[in-house]
Image 1 (cartoon, rainbow, N blue to C red):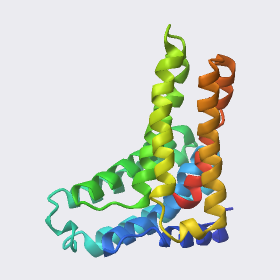
Image 2: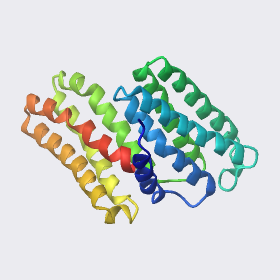
Image 3: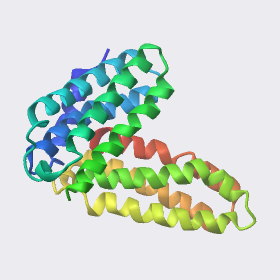
Amino acid sequence: MFKPVLVLSLFLAAASATATDAVTDAMQKTYVPYRVALFKTNNNAQDESRQAVAQAYQGWRQIAAQFGDRPPVPYDRDPLFANSLAEVSQVYAKAAEEIEKNQLITAHETLEHVREVMAQMRRRNQVIIYSDHTNAYHAQMEHVLINGEKILAASDGLLQLTLQVGALDYLAGRLHSEAPADYLKNEEFIALYKAVDRSVSNLKSALLSQDAARVKEALGKIKGAYSKLFIKFG
């Protein structure tokens, strides 16, 4: 069963990372169950995935109803605003169908597009929030994890992967430097951030040792640390 306490806890964390305009604030509130949906579809939890997507979709429909015809500043001059609202709605509808068919891996990949569309909406309208920094880290992390072993297989693989992990290390630093002030006073956030930072530091150390076995082991611990930060504060 989807736990209201978890959603409330996540909402309280998200509230501190919201922007100052009504649309972005509303988008961030729907991002709370959306993150849960990503997490649950990635962990083969059909019922909880269904409930989280339904909650996120309901919130998104409310955004469309409230702001679709007349979005406030800074989205009022965005010619693609209505299209983006519709696109996210279509993604949620598709993911809901996939979850009903118990195609959770497929639904997870489908749901990833919501994050992309929301980020594009903010970027078009010069809105930056903490989620943009977690998204940047996530994108580089996925590149490193998906292509890491292939890169290692090259003759200069350790050097090439070190370059990619250098970018990951920079983005990990921004997870701290760009965090809202109240996050930096939150012991749970600090602990989760330190786990992410430690996972990247361990990967750097493994690369510097030029030990491919250590590198592969360190790669395997990168995603777990990030996921725990993302589900609560991303």
